Image 1 (cartoon, rainbow, N blue to C red):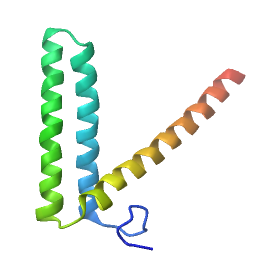
Image 2 (cartoon, rainbow, N blue to C red):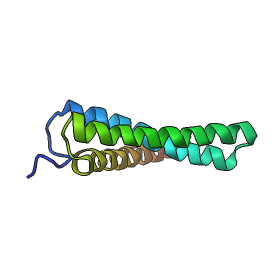
Image 3 (tube, helix red, strand yellow):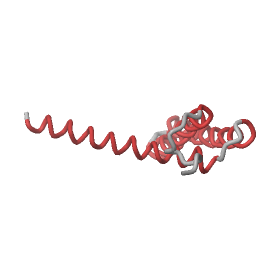
Length: 106
């Protein structure tokens, strides 16, 4: 098994830090698009600012991964973000279904 896979059981603080930055950038991008699309005049400007902020965070993540931490952006960071994000969504859906099942029985 390769140590570059995001599910390999090692602790790498660089990848952890870059994953946090990547998820922040992804959240800003998604919420910025939604805010710019559904918002009014000032809110659309805030959504545009969030999109620009997400692009800047993307460049910072690329710079840090290649030149500072010397890790692979795709193998270590993006696959890790997707892997843990999908795992979090699956856990959230299962918890929500248990919650809904419990309140539907009462």
